[in-house]
Structures are given as structure tokens and as C-alpha cells.
Image (cartoon, rainbow over all chains, first blue to last red; front, top):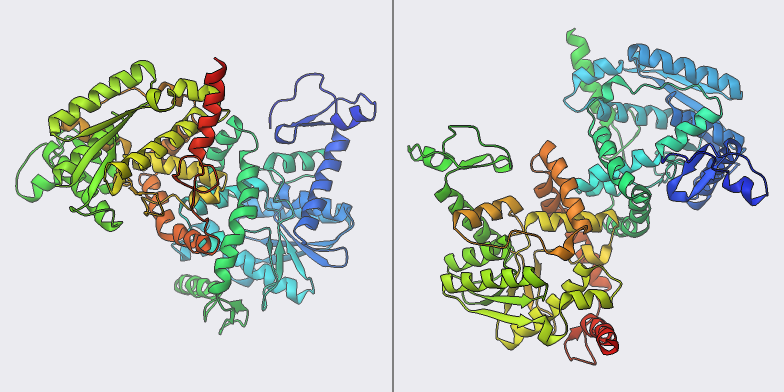
Length: 316
Length: 316
């Protein structure tokens, strides 16, 4: 986010003849905004994204995946303020202080906004992430993703929600898109859309912050006095997505708007081609023979992971 | 290219029980090579690429687009050494010392290898690049590309060649691919293949150095005592492709092989999807109503450019 020049006025206030000082400058939107109008801008942008991609309506029961970080809490806050029926879902990953701290923040936020927070503990369900991590050769983030997606989907159905909303922001989406593009991972690229439709046991999943940058989301949390966990998950250290983010930020600095254009042009121009290609060779959704949840193979990726975890924990 | 550790032996010589010192290390191929075996490796790699993409055979008459730089001269040298019927085609762009110097080097190289160099002068045909550049709003490289492609295609046909070979190396291809991917320029991505087949007035075009890096090509020229023009075209300064190259080199440094994998995976996984998509909405090749050359619109891009140039030169 570019620096604000001293004395810059809020663009919106100025148009009304008022002279409020701007507190934030959004270079690729060419907007300088005061606190109030930044919050308004943010919520309008979320609302527009929800409508543009037909994510959900005010009749839907939405489950927000809450990590305790800025993005998920900002999303939850914005959705509730916009009048959506949004509750929270927190998965206690069992990562010592990180999980303890984030759970407390998620819980006190749910009390503040007066919405339900459902909590599931990995330790009780399968094993905490540090144990799961030891049981697999894959990067921790990859196993953690499998586990989170599994419980989120299963509990959303059990609890009667029709939508899962996650706090993935533009920087997240761009970093993943960039990594998948560098390796041309077609199967992943095909799924890189802000909406994954409901399909045979899979609940509809949406990313209403996909056009909001990391900094915009942090600022929204800050201006709304939302306390969130500020440090990264200790297992994410060295993750390639973090490296790509740094890399892309340098490009963005030189050419503001690069990230947003990269992402939006992908959605507009490349995604339809991949979708068309997919429809010819669509993978069939099966039912996992172990847990009965939807799966693309006979045993779902969660149950395969669980088998590995059980091997490790049995021998201990 | 990673630094060679002192005292490293040539991998190939070592396998024969000899102890020749290596002079070059190719990290993503895990090869340390002496001068002789580097030259052999380079030429084998070119030959393999020619065969893999069915570029041409020893029966074809090939016209090499020669700029006087390392890549085109290295390519020409390798093709002739490999026994291909390859002559050169030099376009004098009329860029002062740059063109003068590169023309002399291209000409003396053609004499050294005993092959014909055809020379066409833009000043005589349309106007030198500095004048063309003034006549259009597009970046100089873009207009220059249009003009070069036009004359290359037209003269290759007139002179009875069936193939145009250009010296685009892996770094060139990767930089262009990266730029087109950042903007998801589908129409350009569709044409990003080392072979553009012959089509209604367009001669077959090939890029036999597409798997050779810039440094490998410079080294090949150096080891073969090929004198080439070392400075960049003055009009290319600030070109986005140069910026992307710097950017990608940093990624490559951290993860050797990234560039090659980005390019090869594109060809293997993404290109077929784009090709399939294209076949459904293929553009029809027409004939330019002004010059009679093949074109995708009624007036070809060269003639449109020429009209602009004439406007400028007429008023002067």
C-alpha cells in the first residue's frame, strides 16, 4: 500500500464538500479514504463480490471458517454487518500457543458480535497438526488443508449450513495461482475460482475476500478494533506461497494493479477455457468406503492421511 | 549459471577415465563439462530439440534469422555443423552503430562458415526503425517485430526456403510466456510454441534454441570464437521482457530449473488445452488487399504500420 501524502483529503468526503483527512490510500483504485469511508468501501467491495459470483443470499445459512487471523475475522464482521446469516467454525489445530491464542481471539470475537462459534478440536478428532505433520512426507500446510477441508465440509452439513465461506484474500489467491501457474498444475488451476459449487456431498465454498488485499483486510480489522492473531502459523515458515508473495509484492510495487489484473484476467479469460476442457473429462465424485464422505478416489484423502497418522500414533 | 568449484572434472571425460578440468557447470542438468564436451552437449541438445518438435530435416532449406547477436550466430553455427542446409537472413534495421556493427559481424561470420547471408535494408524497403518508432504509439520492439516477421516471411518464400529458424532462447521464451501469463493473453499464449506450422502463405517457423539458456548460448559462442554484438539494441531499454528476465533470474537462482520447468510444463500441459480450444474458433488466414501477403485482417499489420510511417515521412 503506497504511502499517504500528508494532508490528503478523503475522496468521498471531498465529493460531498467535506474536508476529512484521508487515513488510507489505495493506489490501484486511486482512492484516498477516511476511516469511515474505507470501512464502507471494504464492505461494498465484499457485497459486490458476493453478488458478482453469486455466492449466497440473505436466505442462506453461512459457516465462516475462522482461524482467528485478520482475514477470517474481517470477513465474518463484514458479512454480519451486511446482514448475512453467518456463524463461525473454528478448528483447534493443537499447535501450542498459536492455537490457544487464536481460539481465544476467535471466541471473544464471536461473543462481541453475538454469533455462534462452533469449535472442533483436532486432538479429539484425529491428532494435533504436529503429530499429523510427522506422519506424512507432505508439507504441513498440505496435510493441514486436507484435514480442515474435511471437517469443515462434514460439520457444515451436520450443522445445517449450505455455504462455507473462507477468508482467502487476493494475495493468497494470487500466490497460489502463481505457484500453480509456474508448474502449470492444470487440475489445481481448474479449481481456482472464488466459488466451488455444491456437488454430491461437497458443500458450496466461497471466497468473498478474493478481491481484497492482505493489507486492506488488516486495515479493516484495525479500523474495526478487531483483535486478531498477528503472527503466522509456525508450520507455514518457508512455505513457497510466502516466497511467492514476497516476489509478487515486488512486481506490484513497480506496477500497481499487477496482482489484481493477474487474478481477474485469469478468472475472465483462462478459467472458462479450463472449465470447458474439464467438462469433457470431469472426475466422478465417489463415496469414501471408510467414512462415507465424498471423494475422488475409493478412500478419501482425509482417511488416507488418518491411516498414516494411526500408524505413527500406534507405534508410539 | 552457478559457479564452478575449483578443480571440478568434466563429467563426460571422467566417465571415460580421463581427468580433463571442467570449464562450465550446468546446475539444472547436474553436469560439469570441459570446452569440447560443452560444445558437443549444446549441439546434441539443439539436434534433439529439432527432432522432438519435428522442426526440419536435412533435406530442408533453412533460413536463419541473424541479428548478429550471440543466439542467432550460435544457432547458425550449430545447424551448419550438424549438417543442415542453413543460410542467413539479416535485416538492417538502420539503428546507427548498433546496426552497422551487427551487420559487419553477421557478414564476416557468414564468410567464415562459407554460407550465404541475405541482407535486406529497412531504409530501402520502408524506413529505418527510429523513423518507424516515431510513427507509431506502440513500443519500438512491437513495431520492429511486425516488420521483421513480414520481411522474413516474404523473402524466405521468394528465395525458396521452406523454414525460418530464429535464435529465441529459453530465457526469451520464458520472459514472453511470463508476460503473456501475467496478463493471460490467450491469443499470444496459443502461439507460444517452438514450431509455428506453415499456413496459407506463412512459412513454417521454428525456435531450435528454445531449451538453451542465454548463458549457455553465450558460452557456446565464446567457446567457438564467434564474434557477436554484445550490447543490447538501444530501443529495447526498459522493455518489460528485460524486467521479467531479471525477475525470473532471481527465482531461478533460488530454485534452479524453475524456468525450464515453467516452459516445458506449459508446452506439455497447457498448450494442448489452448490448441484444442483454438481449433474451434480458428482465425481464418486472408490475403492482404494491399501487398498480397497472408494476413488475419483485410490489411496486414505490416501495411497498416507502413501507412502510418508514410504519413510521418510525407509530412517531413
